[in-house]
Amino acid sequence: MIGIFGLALVIAISIYQLATHGVGTTGITPGHELHYFAAPLARTDLNGDPNLNPPCTLAQHDSRALNVCLLAHRGPLVLSFFVTGSDQCERQVGALQTLSHRFRASAVQFAAVAIDASHKSVASLVRSRRWTIPVAYDRDGSVGALYGVAVCPMAELSYRGGIVKARLIGDRWQTAAELAPQVRALVADQRGRPQS
Image 1 (cartoon, rainbow, N blue to C red):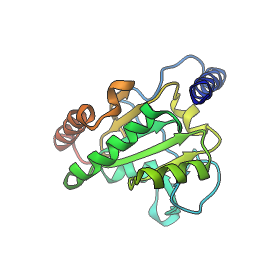
Image 2 (cartoon, rainbow, N blue to C red):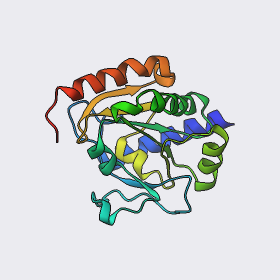
Image 3 (cartoon, rainbow, N blue to C red):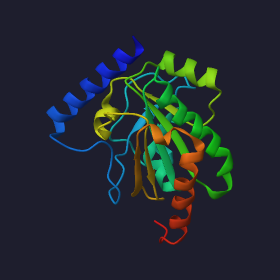
């Protein structure tokens, strides 16, 4: 039943993406800037839909929301998109949780967004998995549509400033062992880039 729901969700997002943005690819391709958004964090009392045009200033930021612009300007960012109820997708978030400890000294930001999910279901999942990285929920599916999320697990790795270095899609990217070399490469490449 969960698999059928996940498949229906992917089809619905794909149709929405095609209808609103035309034919495109899943995620943001390397060399392009992340799409900025702010979405309610599951561990807070903030309820609502994501803001697809958030302010990128701390003064106007609600700390109960995941603001991708602010994260991307703080340092390199690994941003995962997942669907609740999909073990493969949820495993990637667990892998990011593991890597957040390993890369703490390198200032890499790790975050995840549950696509088309309720506050209650994501908050319950975050508690049960003991995730401490920022996990937001995309109640109306607008972030999923913005990123063209048609499959998960999916992660965008961006340099400080929000330019995408790599887009990782598929089951291969659900473990810390597979993701760690990509994060190390992001950190190494960031050191050679001018600060933005």
